[in-house]
Length: 175
Image 1 (spheres, helix red, strand yellow):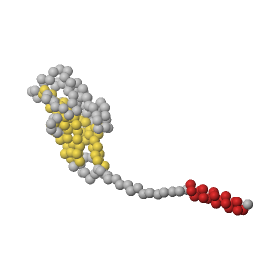
Image 2 (tube, helix red, strand yellow):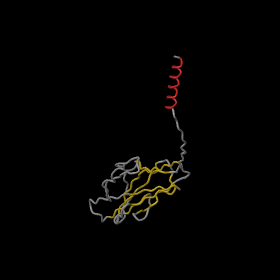
Image 3 (tube, helix red, strand yellow):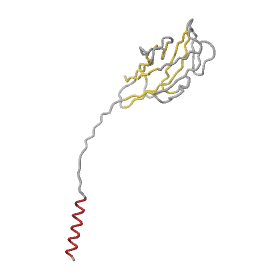
Image 4 (spheres, one colour):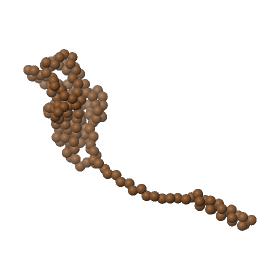
């Protein structure tokens, strides 16, 4: 009986050893960290509130109904009209953040997506079109909301009820 127990125990051990087979391998992992920046639009307390996209990089702004004389929507300002045009302006906050970058500051420019043969556009006093960018700042501070004045100059010859619409592309470049 003792031999039978020894043979049974040996058989169980051989079966256990056969089921416990293992293999090993090594995986070498590498990654390269790239510095990056991102840009988001935020409502400015003194400006027209964004109609959508607050805190994102794709926002919408509606100046509302504007005119050379009379009441303007809240957050829109208008310097004294010239003999042939009037300008409306509102601040929008732009925040640029950085990670893994030694960049001390950034340059922010604006440019129209499509041509506007009628109106003149400016950002912080710097004119821009679809063919050339205007500089909002050459030394923007990372991590803070920076007010950017967006202005449209409209000729007196523009017909009543004309809708002005375009996309302004903002580009931040690390310095």
